Length: 113
Length: 113
Image (cartoon, rainbow over all chains, first blue to last red; front, side, top):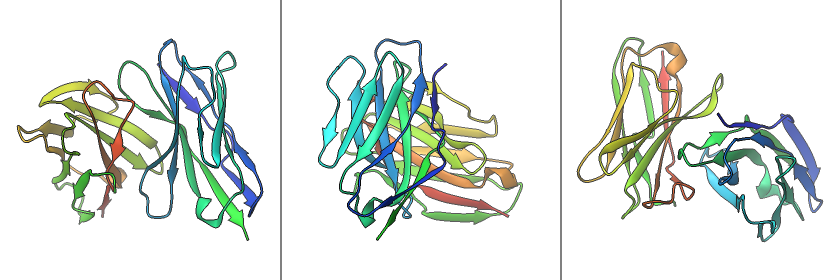
């Protein structure tokens, strides 16, 4: 079985500052993918970033980057230059060979102007 | 816009009733996935279909069933509805062999009264 844990229910960041969202996971598979999804008030699920487990290089998408620590089974998301539009719920997720996306409980991020 | 469509957007029904949620995948995608997002259970995988065949099953109740039709659209049938079935139901689709590339629809909000 695979599990994803997001222990922080909510965080707050000042506009233009940097924030890091934490996630740990567990899986017995060697080939898997990790994701961060954003869910704004519209409830749409938006893919923020994806990381392949066998790639050592951390994924980056504009202001979003991850710190993937495979041995520690840790996968954190860093948001730089935070914007008001970044306010949303963020989910960490994992998928292995079984094609089932497993999600964490999510973290609510608020951005202070 | 992910290219995945779901109807209806909102559904309000009474306990004991039966409803059908519909999903049209992105053009060319053969796989369809159903997810449930509720306050109690969070986001969880229900079931996957690939080209008309059930491929993977998650925590789907026996009262729930799904199918994928020859035109690749999928329907999720929920019967004997209970208050606890109130949730946001997402459909996602992915290209063949690329379950790590799932595109989510906007969801159907089901309210059971």
